[in-house]
Image (cartoon, rainbow, N blue to C red):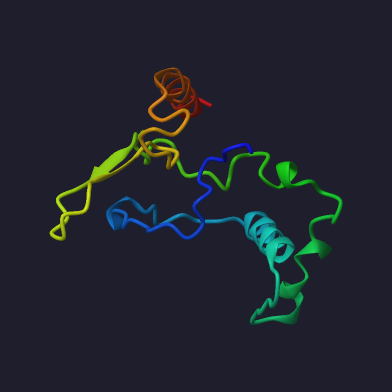
Length: 134
């Protein structure tokens, strides 16, 4: 059996810092259509819209467009200048005596393969810095 990263679908979640959520972003009409196309392709039940034509974003984006092409210019990614490079975190000091929880930046816990992989972290930091200069 092969172990998967983040295979804990129903694991406890942790709050995040709302102050780090990027706001005030302006999207072009093309970007909105691409986001709507992705949402429609991933929807399993219902889609709603204020206008009927908004329910058919594929009329503006050919259906044969691959997922990679929808994000060719990285518009789905956050602005790298506004995002800090983070590593893992530890939550501890639970009043009921539970052990502290620790996760690396990919959600792996201590003892799992690849936890705090220094070589991977250095590679990702280089990619993060490189993204700021593209």
